[in-house]
Image 1 (cartoon, rainbow, N blue to C red):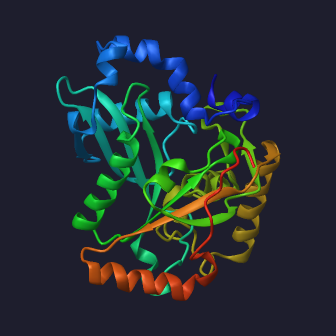
Image 2: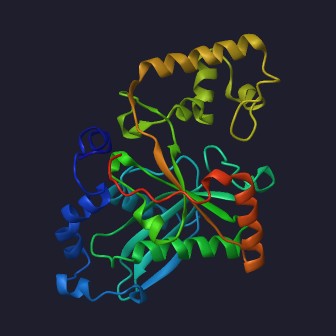
Length: 304
């Protein structure tokens, strides 16, 4: 089942990644030269945690292919920044991966002064024969690595009702539940580029698409580049007639795509500092800025 059909057709009673683990298990065991009894004996201590540099093209390609095979969205996020893996020590087989990314929109859960400390846990999956707690171990190992090696201090994550996800893995890691009000209510599908899968309206405002819009109205890449900020156009310096023409091209692209309604996603956050004192300060900032999200109960019904 490709990613397009997966969104449209999955009707299972368990989360999609548990379903695909059942489907892939026999082949996964064979490729790892493992038996059912051998896999049942594996423990987290049998695996090695590793940060994967973006400069290591070979390992990044391996992570990409793993996500495409085992993860619900089956593609990399728009702005991946950090990749982590869990490998079986005895043979180096890749058994799990986490990808963190720049959020599409910062949540300001800890106030504007802390918004640059947010990182999105954007993709993650484990192989079918991995120990049950390998995923939670990998998530927490990744968070601790980020806190020790970067300035990021709070980590947001989503679970998708369409995939029958509740965020059980985040609940197991004691994430704070933020409710089911996150994400877009509509997704789009470009029939001319089906490999993109379904995407949100943010796709129309991607930097690469703005260059295409500009080209269609006769503006060179170099000229348009002079009007761009890091990720978006600087509308204040762009002539009004050019702005109108670009917006028209964006709308033409939008109307050329299929669209569908989607349910809101569950959202979670984990807050961690390098010291207990820093963690406490960050938690106080969260409670001050997001008081209605401090004590929400975890969801328990799939597909809602």
